[in-house]
Image (tube, rainbow, N blue to C red):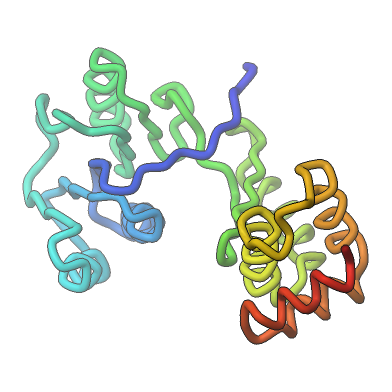
Length: 215
């Protein structure tokens, strides 16, 4: 099976989670981290999910009953996190009919997409998938790669974004064309000393001074 990799912007979009246990709780957390609206459908809902719903200020709707056809109306994405293959298949059929992306946890035949093992640190989102063949191997590889990611990667990315925006919009650098801006940013990210120096900048004025040295 050949899969198409993609990062989805689901901010404000409805995602349905069928199931109310531990696995469903992890899906709800990840969806809230992505700023989605979430509807949880299950006759039994864990305390963890209830707490997330309470903290979400209306971002999570709890429907305390079994799934039934029609529950996926207006959904952009669906997670079926039950241990009942029959329910998973019913959810899949509705999602497939309505062209809604669906993932049934540990049930590949009832999936139209698989969730990769991923790392999120600030703006960094690194995802790795085995196409459902072995989520455990994907998790192992993700952990090994994570060991090589700088602890302050979120700070680095924030400062790199600011530096890129300054080079593009600040009048001080108005004479620099796009290829030259790209060369400066490439020089920074390939030099650990420059990356450290940029990360230590406290504000935009210090970043401007740092960039002037490189021009």
